[in-house]
Length: 602
Figure 1 (cartoon, rainbow, N blue to C red):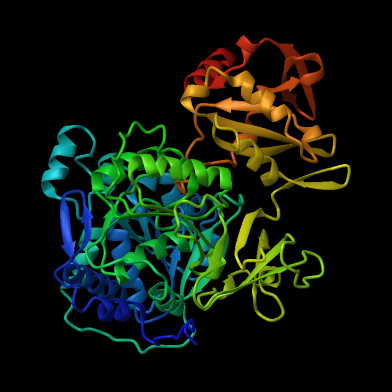
Figure 2: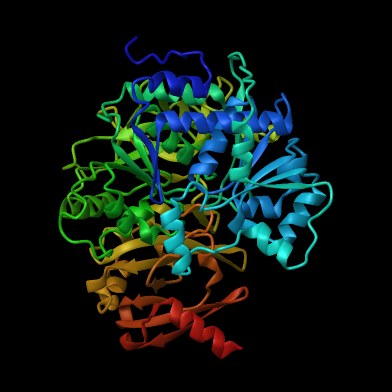
């Protein structure tokens, strides 16, 4: 069959080397003034592999990595996999909150961590969890000495590292733990002459991913097969992308965020691309980094693309950028229309909706490459199958009926580390239950609307919040929107948080008038709309952080049509207080106003 995905049955780094046998002189990565060829990159993988074996022995013990997508952490990831280790990728927040669960319980005694995440409390937590080796990586690892010197002179980079400062302060490092700088660790590996090779094994676990930072407050640990990486390469080979060796890809999302970020890196490496690593969590740096790196490809969340229109870039400024792949969140047609209008102005050739999940191991669907289409329908990638089922009976639904999307993918994971959760993930015939609300149209294309858990419940009726969000985003003045919910007296009520386009900031009452006329079931329960100047960036995922939005319980506005007036609603405990206001009192919340309010409260 044309779309059949055959397992190449070889180890991950071996597969990369075979695919890049003619690319050894091509630059694999650019990082703060330094360039590293594929030959140099594979040598780094080997150095880390030998260092891990020397430090931790020949076993399958997990190596925990909590570091952003910088050259050293990427090298450590592939080095650990080539050393036959399981790589446990975790964000710093998860590692700080659950150190024993994600080190002791999985048998990980070695942690690679970014020095910006380290503090005395975390060191003590790791010590109490039984961690023996702490390998400290820094943004300056592999940085050009010239860039480092200039950065130090400007005060952007510290002259001393974490260990220097810690020891200089007179503090004692815990006994029984050794602390190693990443550069010293790699150097030790380079001195080892013996090279241990491991045979290929079918269905071997290669990595754990602690994900869920913008979809749940507690992490879910997903197990990924090593075969998932090599099979993913086969899937992408059969797609229509025209990637070629030397094409430039900019990497924004931290490596420890789910499979999508690592696969974004892996897809570039197996294609012989040049990776530009940008370890910034701030999505508002997105436009500048795209312009500076002259990238041909970027893989990002929709919240990154939403920042482009107000980024100050001139027309045609991103004409070098051919592909922007959007993933991680459902995209509405109204959003895609705005994204593509911005893309056309800036010179971007394709803005595409890529759909996938951590649990399915790679991008499993892609939108039409015809950039004139603003819908967000997708078709399954080669080797992937979709079906829409009833959420209660799990029976397959006919076309044009919304249900839950289930997938079968060559790259699908082994499931969660917590076996009890797998009953919800896998169906009886071993398909993946995505939990996403979707539809299959008569033309064979699919659309994903949002997560099945994205609803509010009132009077025993459920209302999907993404339906409201979609209607709000259709307004030309709305740049971004998020529908949240509050629980009051055992009932749930929606509220809307929006960012306006600059030219609409003085016309807030018109937006409220539009929202008051949205005809959707559940809108009668709307608390109101809050205006903010920007959504904050999640410090772990670099995505828009919507988990913190319900913490702000004041300043929700609504127009009462029958009285042609506006009210403000503030939530106080289990109740709310509403009162009339004038148009002039409708505010846009900024960081400056929040700080002023905090000072007033103090």
